[in-house]
Length: 173
Image (cartoon, rainbow, N blue to C red; front, side):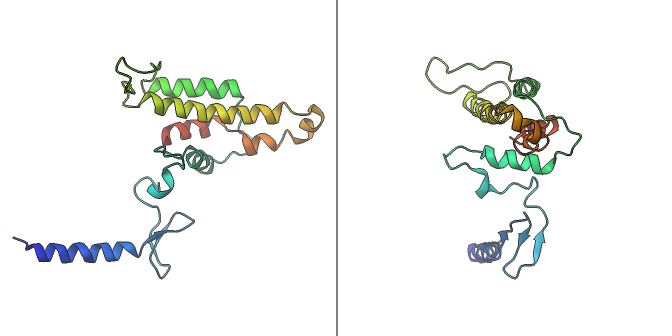
């Protein structure tokens, strides 16, 4: 049998060791001396402090979007999706996980959980984030046609998203 004093001591020692660790900008876990303790934070590489959005939402969609673009960088051969293609692929991916249609609220006014385990509010926020990004792509590509001809090679690479990047984003979210 372990005494309470012993477990308290072990708990304090563990907390002391853990408070000296931090997540570096390159997503490695380091100690106070700068030594690498772990190459990837946690099993999934997600920092809990950076996951929550500023608006109190459980996920920071902007951060996940940038992460998906970093995981699958777009090379010159990738086709950048149009806004209609982005909506179609998002609908396909959500259908794969069991989200075929959304119902607003149940009769008691509570947010319902869909059969896949997601709340309707979560799915709506995911869809609205993708919708905002499709509008950004539409705005850039609908600008001045004369300049678009010259800029067509790199503007979509900056603000656009490929099919693989969108699929990775939906999986991460």
